[in-house]
Image (cartoon, rainbow, N blue to C red; front, side):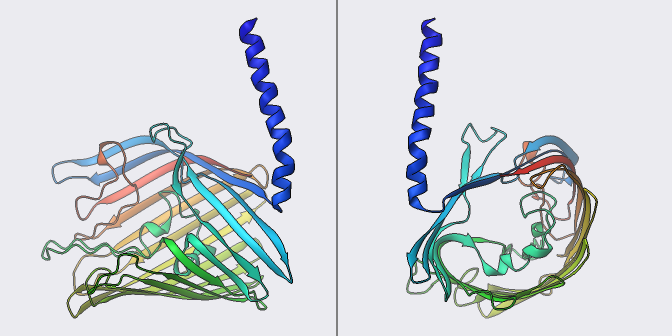
Length: 368
């Protein structure tokens, strides 16, 4: 009876705390709680994890960057509002050592008005966001094309320098400006200062995009420059062009990009990547597929790769979906891209050039 009374007392205390906290939350103005749980059961395989080990596979459960967030705004008068957001990645599997919150996602504070919005914090770059309209997998699973596009992945045995640059980033310590939407047109600018700049290097990052979006067409042009990143006094640069045509319940999207990396003093090597994607909805079902191809980095032969993913989803409601997906990434002989990530037995680590990786998963998504 003592235990029952103690348990009942705790429940009453929690209920009272919730009741009294609700007016406090309401007073802060337009606060909303949101999130997404995206989990799947996967069977993944890497045909060459080491020179001596081939055809390694494993089954696993993935949390796929499930997230929890709180955001809000406050009317400051004169058409000006304070805006803020705090979002964290959540490990729903419990496999990260019992820590549920295991990474900071898009979080900021700023001002919004007729001029647009200005924020500071940690946020996806305009270069990364420009492609999201043709993304089929929310950038968070083994099936997404950003395992390849937006990246260089050369591992040339004839060259001691391994060059792997990722332009699909969420930048910390950033200030961004988002223009107002002008009849479908919008501009985004992001700047990340280098707090550890020296007399010889200043690793700032500037990313910007211009987009147009209506019921039929989407178009985006994005550019990013990173001085002194891979090599001092050399710039890493990326230019991305994205387009999509929307028809009824379907969409076809295309992306082309040109990446340039300073691999040595006065030496810059470039690479061209492209992606074709499509999706179609019928009833509660939705199918999607993409093909992505990365070219060679500079004159390094056999440093390209290609990737294909297929997806089927069934929506029980606007918030809940059951899905199945398949992916395959094939590296050329000297390329080192990876879609599987770190996992048991290093099956996802592309430690050996020329690997082919594949995965099949069945999962469920719920948004709130």
